[in-house]
Length: 358
Image 1 (cartoon, rainbow, N blue to C red):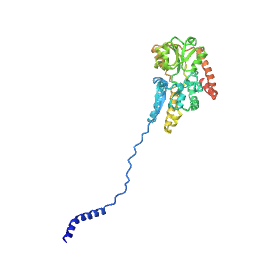
Image 2 (cartoon, rainbow, N blue to C red):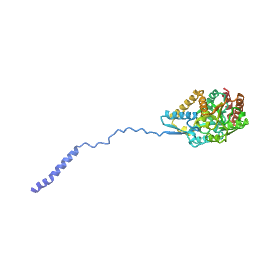
Image 3 (spheres, one colour):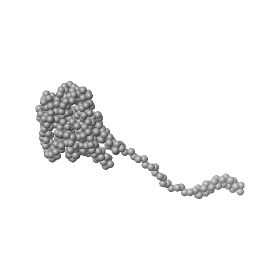
Image 4 (cartoon, rainbow, N blue to C red):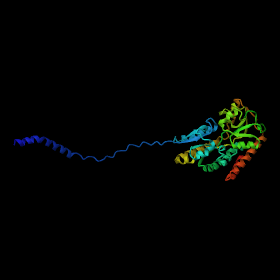
């Protein structure tokens, strides 16, 4: 009896505790299953900006350089930075203008301004489309803008390049700067003149004159050392490149009829989402309209005054007979050069000729 009581005393307390724990556990609520929790709001993924490098042969101070920068900035701003167009002035990307069709067509660079006068090797038809000295007025250039848009769209497409906007040059006149007075054909007989295109060289040759193509960057020293006696120039370039330091005279030769083209590679274009394509197209349309709106706001007089203030002497305009002779020689070269390219050249010639005589 005592042993049984002892056993109860020994085992009783643990048994009671075990019964209590069992009871508690038995009455406990079953474990809850997996709970649905609210997902934290997704953080918007920031897409990296698309960057287009833009080739430009001019420096930022040139009138046409400034217009390129405005176009590029308008694309960047309207796209809110999703497409950033970065302008590289003065050929800073390292590509020659003569190579630009090949470079851009292969998408080595995404965009740039192509000067038609620099691409005669690869695209003689495009190069010969518009005679640089063949227009009689700014009305001619106004008439040429829609024609250039249509033709250049088709011709650049052959190089896998998309035309975004034709761009007539901002200055109104081509001038001749020289070390001695050169205001007639006769006065140029013993002079060697710097040209920027084959067209100018061939026109001068027809008139028994001597001209040679030289890049702008080499011109200052060539004039200073006497390699050249004068040069074809645009008024703003005389100021920005300090040509007034190495020449003494200037005369107005003829209206400036040169065209450039704002372009991009077709590959770069196709890589854009449709809304960015729309923005680029709208900015380009606005650019063309702005050029039309300001076509007659000629800045040349201000440049000419600056040149005089800097010590250059303004010569009288060329005699009308000399200008007509020069124009006729240029027109003949243009006709022969354009028609020699074949294809659609004859059709283009007739369209452009009508515009030139306005």
